[in-house]
Length: 439
Image (cartoon, rainbow, N blue to C red; front, side, top):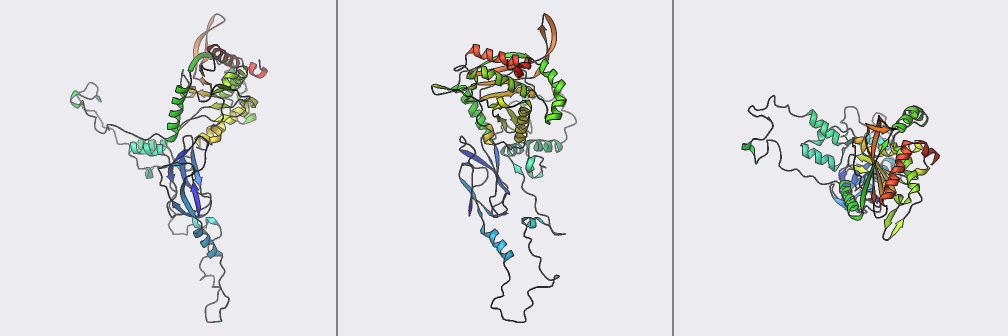
């Protein structure tokens, strides 16, 4: 009997949500087949079968369980017995000659022997029924959305990786099966969809009073960390703006050659990571954090890059970013984005950051105040690039400008140092040659 336990997924993670069983109780399973899905406050993990056997479910899906808890078992004897019966030779010792039929039956009468390969059970004889499709993976957020939209998930075609049903699949199903809109609103209203005085106190038909859904583990963790950052730090933000002309010119001049040589696009984030590392070397307090009555300094630069995901914001960490070139930085960002999209991000990918960069500009944000990522002491916020009139050498010209924000812990970093730090990032980005020359 093999016990199925909730694995350890990081020192700070003590419990997980058993989101879904992909196999039924008493069902035969094969080694490395995915059995169930758990959701922690940071990632979603798929747990596979350690061996062939028969599954016994001890904890139903939807329960929050402690790390290390036993949620199921695999009985190996059934699988072993089947294998032994296939391989067991016919008994002949002590048998007297008789009129029994010979052991070797004619080929046309011999029953089909089981194939030794584990995939034999998947074969379907002509005319036989095909095996039922595997149960699609459904997260709690998708279930909540389906309940809200009143959608039968068995009718939704999954398009996500590994057969997952995504929120987009549910919304697409709703759009495709939405009832036809009424041809015309009732006359006599200046604003056709407005609620009249006679209807005041009630809701229009089809509209519910309240809708509730449980917060996912990762959303609860995000909320807790944001409140922790507010309560435990003296957070302040300073702003500046950066002329992106030189960076855009470099990307236009060398972007195609960069892509052909390295197989990756030259983006903006690598410039800001390089500029941030250079500024952090000049101001180590921004790369440090407070622990009790001590300041802990780092002699390395592990840069976290915030990436928006379906389940919430995650911040994978590029380790030793100061030692990496532009191509390695861009490749690391692309790899993390792919892992987040496929829901394969590991706990180790999110741990150990010393400074964070977040880019709200990809969503169209013009200006924002980023919140610290504890225990870090500073975070840089990038924003949308927008053509604006600026004064250069006494002339009004149009330049691609970006607002940047630096939020910092005022207990460790003074205002003068924060402004100087952000100014250095501005200098490095507006003059990328300084990054290469380290001046």
